[in-house]
Length: 513
Image (tube, rainbow, N blue to C red; front, side, top):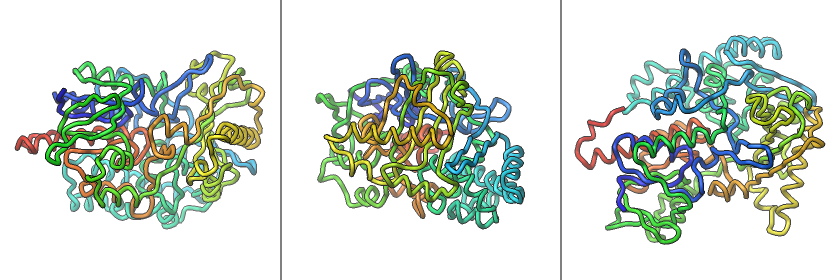
């Protein structure tokens, strides 16, 4: 069976890549080891509750009159009308163990005024932050959307983007003299990236905050799996093919040129172009014959640190959110505002940081009126869980950690939820590793830090293509993790594949943006 391209993995990036190619008239096959599409963008049912697996909020969407690039991406994918999204009413809620509380709205002006209320004398630096973030966001979009980046044009139109792109969040916030408390309130969002302010690129942080506060946050009415299914249905409507329970075990070569893949069970599928939604670490080390593994491949993978590992507790509560006092959708809970301490605690077995979502506050009908769906998620920024977990103590250990987070949630919020627990499911790093196929349960791709942040990765992407006609998408690709980034990385991988195809045909100039 011969195809124009094979996509390995039906996660966000893989689905978007396959659809983009199929719409261009190419014959595409998706191979996925699971029994359903979406990867982490899915849901599962326990008892009378349907839990969202991973999504907390969608960014860059907005409205028809004031929309961001994610809106445009869904439109290009022709599923804009197939997916129903619900807007959140507030951006986020922060509560600390020393009883400090911060609630933020959407909209730049309102956000700035609220920060001034919490941190007097912060108004001017917050205005400067949003002005700078706007320019950085526009410069970043120019890089993403241009077929070929004109550095001179980039310098002329977005000079501050060029300056800020090489600096960390900490460096930029200090340079605009933002009060330390305001910095720390902003950096309660560090868990969205799994990286502290001195390591995190200002571009990544600024584009996220700007888009979130400007365009608002959204949740799919039928969980993130709604988007996965819409992408797959559109892909199949164009004639695309997918094989579930088909784990790729080997790449096939002819005269040192990739020509197909073999899956568990022995079936072989042929194509001259591959898009991988699995990480380069897994791709190079397990799918390539050992004699074809190069020093460059090892350098790329070994020089990078795996990003944060996930730990989530999914709770179905038998009382309503209002009865329990769960009045917010998104809780950022930490001992105090020192985000570096929170980050360091996530290198230990019992972190003092978590993000909780009350799905009923975004989607009142997600469960019956007398129940609540609450998810508590934290991160490990080290190998501590895999070092401590054994076959013998695994279930006892993850239950102890889950109890720690339930206690931490109750103590920090001053709310009681334990007696209302009807259903509970615990996902450890081992769960995420088994479910998503990611090394060590890493849910955030490679750790962004120093000169290995998003802009250097984008600029150096061509030099990291170790195999002809192979491109990567998803959270381990150059655009980093996050829902929009992974969808967008799939589209970009498809466009690069089309470029490869055109180049072989000798009419590269015919490629459309």
